Image 1 (cartoon, rainbow, N blue to C red):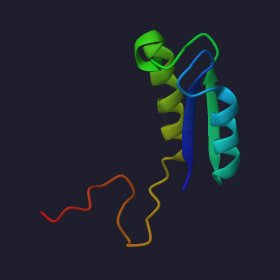
Image 2 (image 1 turned 120 degrees about the vertical axis):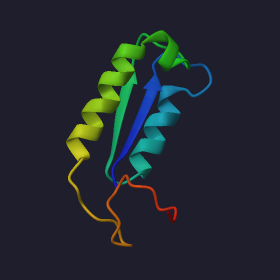
Image 3 (image 1 turned 30 degrees about the vertical axis):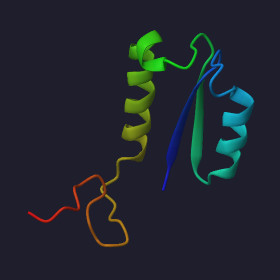
Image 4 (image 1 turned 90 degrees about the vertical axis):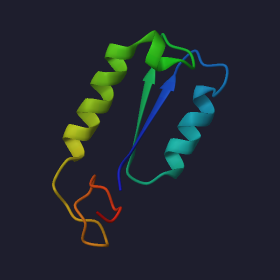
Length: 79
């Protein structure tokens, strides 16, 4: 399944080189780096973060079924 990896270019917690290496190991992943942000992306650039996540979800929303024949994104808890 697709994975979105978002990194802050100025993060001292998770350096971008390490994040990029992780992204290279995850099949079907997309790395987005916010060059002006540190570790607190959701505080530093919330609109840009929202845009990146929304675009990724729109790109991968297809109504496909997972291996248990549930609609992806739906809760698997019994009603």
